Length: 389
Image 1: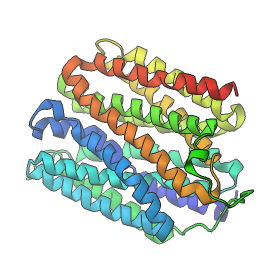
Image 2 (image 1 turned 90 degrees about the horizontal axis):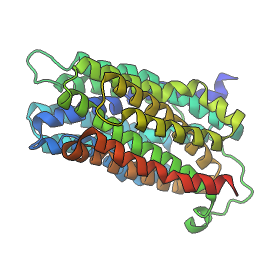
Image 3 (image 1 turned 30 degrees about the horizontal axis):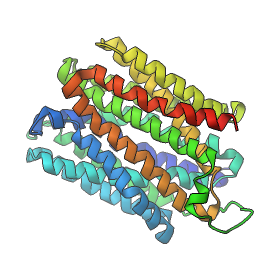
């Protein structure tokens, strides 16, 4: 493997190591900060849901902007927005303003919509047969983010002279600044274009009649919504309701995010060996196991098991769905299909995240598990139809 052929992959992986810390920090602290400054505990997880709504809101603008100004300018603009948003989040906690914190969370979500485009930039820069392995490699950045993000949040949660958690978001701003400098210095827009049999852009209705495209979007959307629902609920349930320590809560969130990304060491190879549809089926099965482990009144070990199986299941569903997606459109259609895909995926993720706080407040942790099961079962007829045609 020549470095020059994979420079885009390597640069974006390093940039994502630091940029992706935004997600685990907000997942860890969003509900905890919300519980302290929200007008009601029912709204504690609203900042996380609003962050994900921010992702969904910005997916189409981010894709459109990059189609006009290029990937690099778009990535840099998104990162500048993120640095501003994290500083604004720190200020909102200092002011004890839940409204301002929600606005900051929405802007962080906007940034993550730009960050999600990294995977498409990588897919456009390598030969088609290398896409699963390269996407899997890119996802390894999540391992660094899983370790670095929550650790920054924890270590700087208490800073003398500042309210709790202000320092966590100042630390996040530093992580994002490093990501910006990597992109500014090393990233270049790719000129690689895959050859299509036809350059014509098909109508969206025709594109979305493809069974494989429906499976691609459904796998990623269901995987993300269930993962977001359970992951968003976990810190609030553990720390605020079951009174586990912040250290235990941090370790479980770190373990979960590691479980999301460590499988990327081999999941790309598994797709090449077993086929993408079998990996999606495996991801579905792991998610079902996750729900059964978490059912009832969880102890610490149940939280561990639930979040580990949840992470691996998400990896298989999301990587499998993204791989299928890149096989379902022509180069000339890529920005349009990518935008619709991410809007649906992160729109459903926002619903899952927003539901977490309401379900916890009304029927507790078991309510989260009850709500997750029918979401997963939506995949059954889609998987069956795709594998039998």
